[in-house]
Length: 158
Image (cartoon, rainbow, N blue to C red; front, top):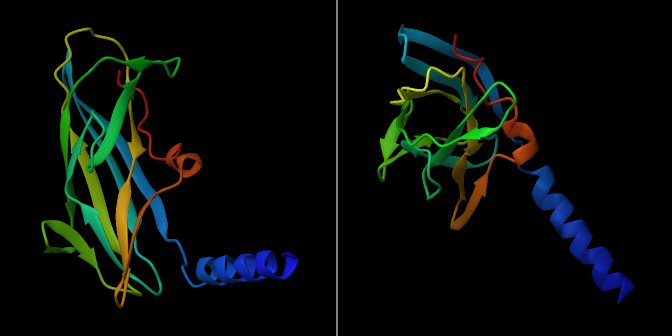
């Protein structure tokens, strides 16, 4: 039994070692358009050393297979704001998703313009950033870990 457990641990560790995660926030911004409307952007790069990657194009404030986000007040309390967004990128589109070949990175910018008349200061925070890793015939659905998503947050609006 100990040998089997050791073998499973070794296999998992080898699989993790062969996947170098590469995602990094490069910029976050809020542009005030008028007193009740602001444009929120989060820019990041993504790519993996040994695997092709697919990233969704669509984003919204309700969870599904797309990129999900929420708006937070100045105390990081979740606000009840529904919004849609789009992920812009220099990556090629393949199967209605952005495609990043193994060993390359692509730049992305999430853009959303929420309709909210509350005049509250708020920030945008990505809560789910799914992607698909592909290596030969192996397809693995994954997501940026929750502890890394704390960096995917804009400053407060004014």
